[in-house]
Length: 143
Image (cartoon, rainbow, N blue to C red; front, side, top):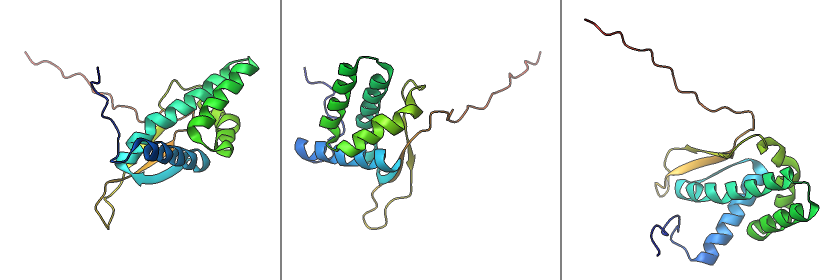
């Protein structure tokens, strides 16, 4: 069945979308933070987190054949050997202690020309704990 297959199509064909995701992910891994539209940032999040998971799996395994396999899978999706090298050799040490949630999206004000919702997507540092929920005190019951 084809239920729930209509996510993040961005109004373009499949080849265009895969090239767009590869280019956005390359920029994200190269610079650590990029500004794009909110729809593209939401589409980039699962794509880039799957690539980071490949890098983490390669860092955690001892088998050189599996390391090479994970790297080649990432290069096939990313289409840029330099960005894959940077991800697998430099950036992966930040993510080995995390169990997912490698990116964060901040919403910005709409773009001036066409009022498109803008966002910043960034890689989260490994030691970042995020925002803690404020602790609520229990209300006393009155009799």
